Image (cartoon, rainbow, N blue to C red; front, side, top):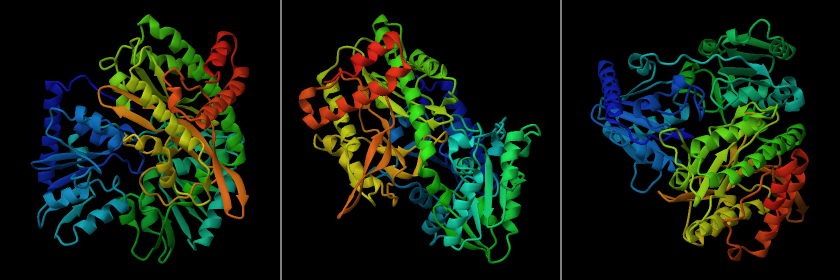
Length: 608
């Protein structure tokens, strides 16, 4: 979801060097030896509004995950495996050292900064954008040093001319016919959990939790239908802290929803005062992983903190029956748009007129023809040949490859609808392929099927399913440097927790009603990338004397390209699954298509 320029250019290099020097001058003026700039905003969002894109503005690295640390004589940026290739290109010709987070021999950001700042030194950061957990980890590492932390002044305000203002786009109602449960019902569920935890107040800072709970949506962050706000929930009070100007007097639907549930409105910035004046000994529930340090610092010491994952996060993750049924409609419409696009793509590749940009534009056009379409769920990743190996690549006019009649084209895309959020990746044969390309494609398909057919016992964590998915690749000495799957929101963020299928340990059991993606891949630098992705629903399977067992049901409906498959590498069971999936796709999508699109779909979904 990024732009990769052809070259940084001398002007860009000088501009970046000047920004870093301006920051160092500001650091010196405030007695700060190291300044930390994360990717997050005041709500620990993965994707942020332009106001909080300070790391992008300073470094030129546009990936969604990364932390920049600047000292008076060094600069380093940490990012994960999804962005190693991209970061290497975007940080070229700069003084910023790329730190490949999690790789052998690479120090963590905390270890590095602790080693760079000497006794009596000072580390600074914007306290709004660093979580309580992150700062505690830093303090733990610095426990043996006399180092000061400064967090109450954002140096970017001193050096960033024309810094974008905080967004304040209109807020609108997500109707109960889509949500399945009213604000009042959801708050009752939350209060029941608070009662069990003996908590009097709940602080909610994450934007998707707030949007879900209040049945409201916005557009403050590109592709994510959320709005800037905080919320406090108690046994007898609901307060939404928001820029009230965005809820205009004639926005009767929004006001009616809030009034019916007894919601008090307060200004967005009033959250600090409210926290600082909580009654002594109040039992306040927070999640330290997404509560900004500045907010936490405002909470009086007399408050009893209950630290855990927020109940709204868990409740939101398990889709209710209305959401599940509406999502089926959503994925059928999105699948029909994908079929129209796939037919167009196949017929136009031979013309030699396509490139990564106009393919993206045409995909958007097919999706936007739906009356329910609300926008993309992330900027499409259209990567041909070597660009397909860059996990979160985004083409622009300068970088776009023309599509040739050979090789592989990877397209990862998604859309927002009032009844769902989609995320689908398909890799297409553009013509003649190498044996390596066909073999890689087939191995990724085998990995995808390994997860799609997995049956697992109640209590299974994502790390267990991750190993099952990777086995076909591991057996060939191949791996991919990202997670296998993530949760997906419902007309919300395309990446949603707490569930995850990843080599990392997340103590979250997969439960019926949760959504997860299934997206293994193979990436060969400067050659090609393969990824195949469906959204899947966790569902009950069987219960017997050994316990409850679950399965995964595909929600995404679109054909896989079978031309690159090496059938001899697939088992009969794998072929049977793919044929069955394609039958399901044909039956579900044919009523939404006509003419040549139906004929194309029948051909694309025929048995191997």
